[in-house]
Length: 145
Image (cartoon, rainbow, N blue to C red):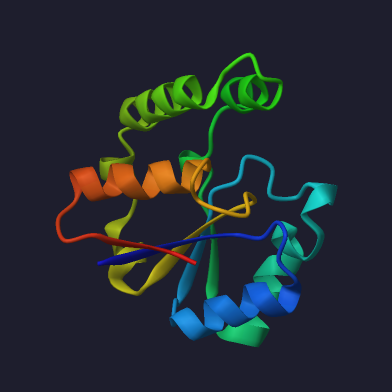
């Protein structure tokens, strides 16, 4: 099973949708806490669903179960949590939510991409979600776009 990840920040629409199209993904799981934020530009949930379907033939699936809580996210953004503490608390949240059981695995019958805003996966919760699923499911390959 291939799980892709992508962030939209610091990408043009052409770069973003081009990378998705080239990867061959068929589903996008939006794992952002606030997918309708005004800061999301072309990646606002309602617009994104349309663009994905029309430009790439990709199904849009909101996945709030895979988003951090407001408390964890704000703590990291306001620097009361460093990355290691964010990572520890977010991994504990995934475990508490039992996402490996709660997620419909049929979503992953096709190549799927996890979407967040960070430009790279290094310090982004999408990487943590993908790694968590890899630890709990079999034969998972992670590909960061």
